[in-house]
Amino acid sequence: MAKPKTQGHIPDLTIVVPTFNERENIRPLVALLEAALSDVAWEVVFVDDDSPDGTAKEVRALGREKSYVRVVHRIGRRGLAGACIEGVLSSVAPIVAVMDADLQHDETRLPVMLGEFRKDQTVDLVICSRNVEDGSSGTGLSAFRKWGSDLATSMARRALKITATDPMSGFFMVKRESFNTVVLSLQQQGFKILADMLSASKGAWNIREVGYTFRERQFGESKMDSAVTVEFLSLLAVRMTGGLVSIRFILFMIVGLSGLAVDLLVLKGLLATVIGTFWVAKTVSVIAAMTSNFVLNNSLTYRDRSLRGAAFFRGLLSFYAVCAVGAVANVSVASAVFGVLNSQYVLLAGFTGALVGALWNFVASSLVTWKA
Ligand code: GDD
Ligand code: MN
Image (tube, rainbow, N blue to C red; front, side, top):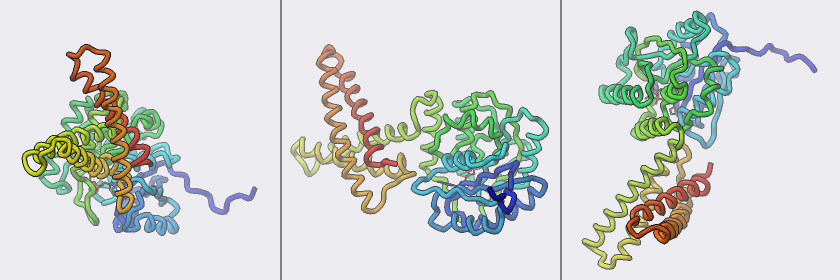
């Protein structure tokens, strides 16, 4: 076989940068990395979820100029944690960093973080923290977000028994071998991959922290929204149940409970006003609940594969069909349980039916309505 013309670039450090609509930040970030990492064999991998602003195209153009710039272009998927995981897995380097594209993370800390691994071979993870002596949230967060971030940090530290000072950080460096020991249990959905990794490592990792000041975003806007908060709370629940359930399952159940509230409120409202017949009012309230469940699941539980346009309406119809079968299962199971148990177990029979119906709805809708 002929030898390749150019010797490939073999990195000691891969920097994984998840991106969504960050086109204008790509070149400035690479320039900053070049300045900060002159003594290291490094590469940067942008993991882009098919950003409408053409971020992936911009990275490919830059990759034609610089062999150490790569892209992982994901289609039909969304999510920060999943993007980071894929980026890390795409690298051959022994040490991998994760940082934001928007220049909020101080790239001059990268050689310092790398130094921690060089000083001590047993280090598994180095976190860039805003909450140690020489770190700060600077002007990077509004007062409200700073408060939310501090609250999430203290919750994560208590609930997940994390000792690190900034488990919410999106800026860290991890040894590839160590990452590989936890990757199978990491949640793809969500924003807080570091907190998840820390919890998955069960306190067994040798962790170092390096301070940094969180800067203001340069171009574009933050993707942090209220759904991120709900996802984070679900992540805590996932970890507290020992990984028995997924973030998606918890979100689906929360939405299901909200549907119960919609059902009852609409029923009561209709009976008090325009509809006198109970079964008619109940039919309308059930349809209202299914519709609201569909809309919420589409924008929260399945926001990584949210249905739009015509697919939205096809999805809605298939969701009605799934829920109809779920309702039959609910009634049948509840009746069967009621039949074998003593009549004082009415609630238990009802609950068992509802649980089976909900499980059916979850599994069937993930296979039919929001199939990957
Ligand atoms: N591929 C991909 N897919 N990337 C995403 C997605 C997504 O769905 N959502 C966000 N990103 C990318 C953004 O383009 C950015 O590069 C990075 O992830 C962080 O998103 P921001 O929207 O800038 O988040 P932030 O600044 O509010 O919060 C970040 O910094 C905090 C402090 O370190 C995050 O990293 C937080 O987790 C962190 O707490
Ligand atoms: Mn940011």
